[in-house]
Length: 394
Image (cartoon, rainbow, N blue to C red; front, top):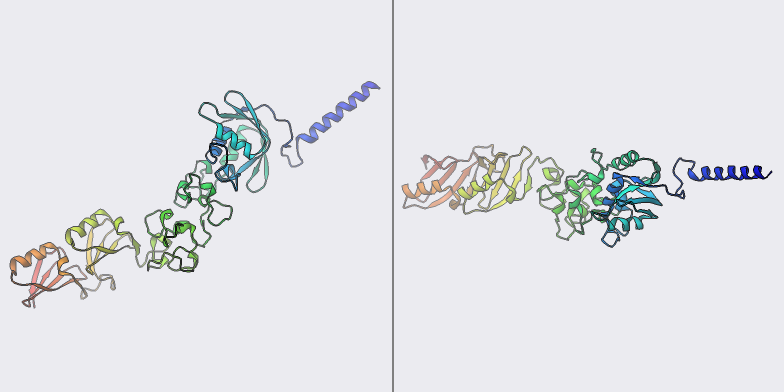
């Protein structure tokens, strides 16, 4: 009878063990006694990643959402406790995200995490739980988190949302960590949000100065970059509904660099013009300044000078013609008055040498690039676009 009671007790203990080891959904019971840890490169990767989001004292760069220190890069948080091991063989039981941060902040090049006890459970960002039973499972777990679906896991992707700006560039508060920058407070950090300010306009379409970097634009100079400012020009209309959200006089739909098609030309910073164009203007129009520069949808450039001259260049910066923007330079009968001092030096030299006792009363540039110069003696001189003399008229 005594042996029978002992056997019943043994069976009961076995039943309790199996009932506590696994939940009905197949995930590990978080109260199971931790098993011995094994070497894990993936565990090292995760802890190193967490370290980038915590301070040296173990506190979080994003204290309002501490889980972001692991969830944004890897797509999950652990279901605690978990057992980690250092490279010297010492094991540590981690009971929550705060303790995980403490471990991460303390690792060094000589004392680091290189193991974990399998199996363990993770909770995905969508709330589902999964059991990780091996190193292969663990590696698959971290590699599957890819916000922009470009085939590069977030933890190795330098542009998580594929918006053209590096994740580090979307650190709007410049504290060295992009996880705590969330302009629209939607729970998605700017560097993983393609519309950071939720204004209906993609971040990549808020490059209002056309320099290829939307993170450095602040149209209303309020200290908030346009991509985090739902009303970039502070005119009372959200950018997504504003036809000219940077208030530069050119509709967004006409700006190549602002989500438009560039049909009517897109304003660009004159300093960003190809050097060949800047050199041409310096040589041929030394007394003028550039008041506007545009790039057309075909890549050609249109430059307006302070003397009223408009110059056209191809996509390589080679001079094409001078013309009037109203007709696109296609009407040979149209001309524009220009400052005589802005005439090419070769024309000024020709007049000084051949008409020394006259002054220039009027200078015009034709849409084909040729020049017409009226002198004080009634003579009219004609030159080609390079300044070569063509003919005399009156």
